[in-house]
Image (cartoon, rainbow, N blue to C red; front, side, top):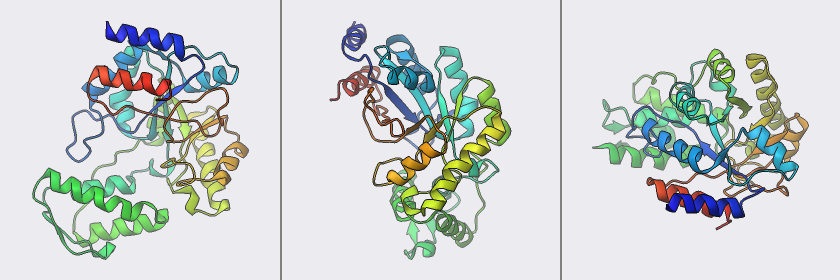
Length: 314
């Protein structure tokens, strides 16, 4: 009854208000090093709730309707960043079963067997064969871990120390950490070009997410332009379809990208761009900086309620 009432409230208040949900991975089973990533069961009930009480739409279609002021009430779009293989193997079958459209933004530089720097770091610290980590590459003392909680605490304390460095320097640091700790890489987590094409052929919209996932603000204008345009061209060659949407890496306006990148996205021929700024988008939105938002709640009711509050701007 409460869910039905929330749906009716949305019908009355959310016309021309678009919620775009942001995900990264959907893991088959819970990963102790990535507790915030939903597993298949959690993602399924979230998508069932979206199907039953909202109006799930393909993002490109929703953007067109929003521009025209014709977006239906309770409209929601589902998106994924980075290009993880489990978007194809775990999330896509659930989305297909429930009739939920989605968009996946792919950072093309990681589609040939190399994992993203943050995953490489998390996997290193999550390696249960190691209990003392040599952190000389970060000018830090040896760090000891004893359980999953201490491993998570260490990994997520190190990420901010690396995130805002140049993308090439990030790779160099991670390479050195692996060398210093004498261990090997985890298996590739990202889709290959062939798998990206497969996902596209299954009806998932493919969007661009740069080549190397840099913090665009830290790059020269020429490098920003290359990262943005090259990712579009590469993906179009892989899937033989136009790529019309772009997602900014990390995605916080001013902090992670500036107006330079926004101009470059428009100049590259994208129809829209998405940030990670929380909130909804309306017909007055900046089309190359649409907001995205995902409830973090673990109960059905709180998840639903937070989506409705987001629609209401609360």
